[in-house]
Length: 192
Image (cartoon, rainbow, N blue to C red; front, side, top):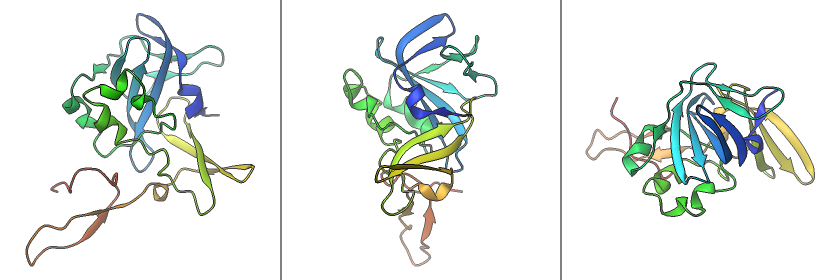
């Protein structure tokens, strides 16, 4: 059984060197649902950190809070450029924690908020996104839970749930149009 996004929001978290109260974890995943980074929002200390996902780095025991393995070093996010490693990745934050004080004025807040896919996931017409379910090691998005009326349904993760964005063609006659999966507000096309 996986871990829901709700179980990662404002929870006690065991990190190397002691516990942290009321912290939120946001796995940052690609279109295939594979987690590459995990964003730690330490609410009491007003601190943002990124942890590279690796096997056995994040564990959820049957009893107790989620744990980050000893020796795992987080990268502090202090500037907007620090968040650039999340380009092309998404996170799911229906609470919009990064709009709350003290993170609303953080230099990297806009760049991090741009990766939030809450409200953008479209299971199908008439269905509202409710939550995501991650693997127990936070390695991937396993399921999507949505509501239709009063009913709650689940389905496996698929990339088509994310919005697609049209990348602007280069100027000139040889300009070709191509579609790519990216945040609609994201940066232009990457050179390949």
